Length: 150
Image (tube, rainbow, N blue to C red):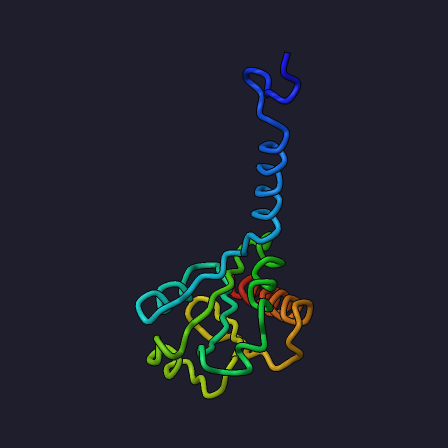
């Protein structure tokens, strides 16, 4: 009997370990859903009923945008469980008309939209917790205003 040979119907241990490693890497490195908005999709998406949109406006050549690193993806990850809040981004180099229409003059700019209207512009520290708290607070304000209007 050859002890090094795999048994019929079973994976060799090295293949099993390799498979588990791939699964762990994919789980750890899976990115949150950041929705790229374009000139064609932006107007309709931000008008979605009962949905708060938190949008980053950037250009690829901006050093401040580059310095954000994975910040926006990290914000997307922490917001994944939040109902009715979507995280998006607009490349102002590609979608200049969108950025002009919503008055973007510096990069990066972070804005909250609800039912097609700009609700707030973020001006605080650029860290995940601050951005998360900001959008949750703005979503709460929108919810309260909607309840009062109904």
